[in-house]
Image 1 (cartoon, rainbow, N blue to C red):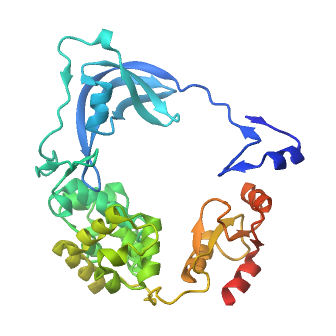
Image 2: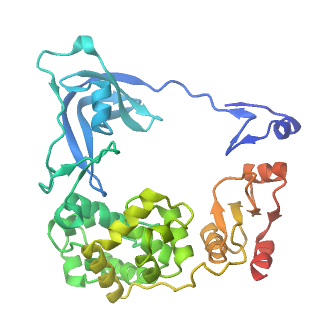
Image 3: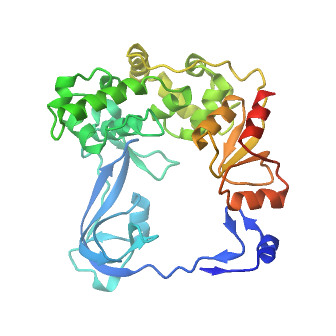
Length: 382
């Protein structure tokens, strides 16, 4: 790390986005190693994305034994000309994720075979399709036919930022899908104690804890529910914008493309994805089953009526006395405000608690109004 020591010089240099101009991290080049591509297989993701993965002869890179490395997509395999049997250069991108940097053409054996994208999903046998404007090929089976997508979708549904079902991890979800105990997210709320306790590595107390977590998860927010559904192109931020704009799920379900385009963060691609998702009878049935199971959230008014903080952007930093950051963010968003991750000229307010760091310095530099927790409550009360 190289850093300017004098505080006045730090203040003069300031920040760029979230990084200070007065400090620079010294990173050594990532360690690289040679190994052989023994095979190229494909993995199926939550959205059906088909990802080529290189199976490598075990090699130590940066103190870790690497045996697999993602090749991202078919175009990337072609661009790097990676073939089965090739000797390749491997490194850990950011010293974390295994990555194939390039092949070594002079070491290519005569029998090296080109990778061919399969035409059907290796998990469910459904056709693999690739749209003209996309780099990713996808399984067309969806949740219903493809167990890989079902597992990924269910894990997304129960994740912390979605329905937040504590205790439902990868191994448990995989067991329940493989044993055909559950097929959709609605089936989670039909689970009984006996079926859970009978699973591998599940004691009676663990089974009861999962059932309690599922019951607790029924009380959620509309934003979390939208995000949990796993609509393609709809991340956590977009889900919050949709919930804020429409106020209730029925209004969102009936929204036209023109109405969706009025929502911040929603463009034509996202709008079409949302309409396509809700038009699918299987997804419509899933939503009805989840509602029937007792999943609920507070209904709100549509944002057609302006809210006090509409158009205002907030940034949170430090530790507040009585609120977590998530709680403060929910309060701000409930009043129409938006919470961003970094301070900029467009920031309306910085809410700062104890041990506020670089964001506070950046806000002071830009003249952004700074609130403590009491000031935030006062602003929300108006």
